[in-house]
Image 1 (tube, rainbow, N blue to C red):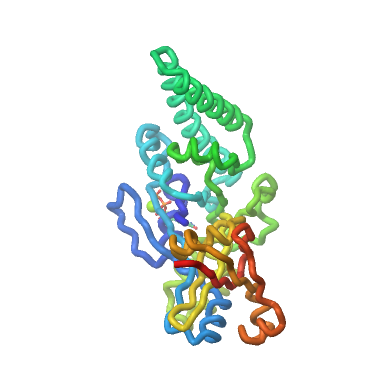
Image 2 (cartoon, rainbow, N blue to C red):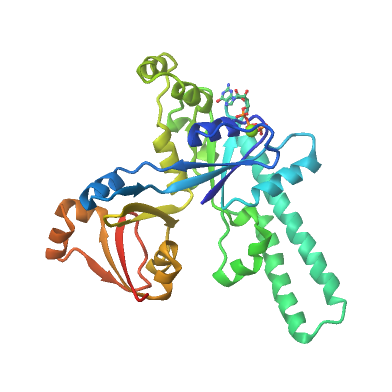
Length: 342
Ligand SMILES: Nc1nc2c(ncn2[C@@H]2O[C@H](COP(=O)(O)OP(=O)(O)OP(=O)(O)O)[C@@H](O)[C@H]2O)c(=O)[nH]1
Ligand SMILES: [Mg+2]
């Protein structure tokens, strides 16, 4: 999943990007920059040992760092926002070290919403113009249906909805090309001066779901640059109660609605990211399109059950490995073996 960093200029997006991905920022990247972070997962290490896998492949998150919005240049802001549309999900980075995060959140949300409404308006006007031209009745019907959907969406956006807005799959398909922010999962990260206890996150933000994170990004970055043996002393001196990079990544990953399932054999043990709620058929397709096409069944065991059993052989002997059909909903931590015709 590609996570876009949304926020105002100087809110700490690039500092966060560098801390999470280890990629050195390219300040000339006016079109944005991509970096990959690997998700540490002790379960994967355990499985790789069990299967004597030669290779271990963790799940990853892609981060997309773009120039932030500026207060006084609406034209370039439109360009900057357009870059963000390529992202699958949004991490809203608020500069809580210098501003009231509630006000900043409201402002940023409003900008994202207005940008979506503008796209909807343009398309609605276009459809209205088409309606005045000679269209076949089939075309007219399709246009009419699309226009109703877009008008309904616009109305929803004007009512301060809860994010993201969900559509039925057919509607989602119809508006996919617009890459609306409103349909992307979003998570708020407050970039704080110092470590904040969770209770300090102000109420209107604290009640958001997924729950916002408070991270002193600059401090975290500085500590991560010190030699290992100095980190603890420095952290204590600055009162840094660090969640740690791995935990922050984990919360972003799960907060934005992803889960992992595992596959393992002697060749490779791998954690696959997938959207929560996906079917095992979609999981099969993630591994290989052939697996989805030739899907017969899946052998599934939750990681915790396998760990308790100690080996696949024991797990099978105790009937812990289930056979599931293609509609089974994958759970986080499922160890899956796909049976397929190839
Ligand atoms: N005091 C303080 N300063 C910070 C923090 N995070 C970032 N900064 C400072 O804010 C400035 C901008 O940080 P960046 O990470 O480049 O901000 P950005 O969001 O990438 O900004 P744009 O790329 O212009 O959108 C830098 O000088 C940082 O040192 C923080 O947590 N506390
Ligand atoms: Mg930047």
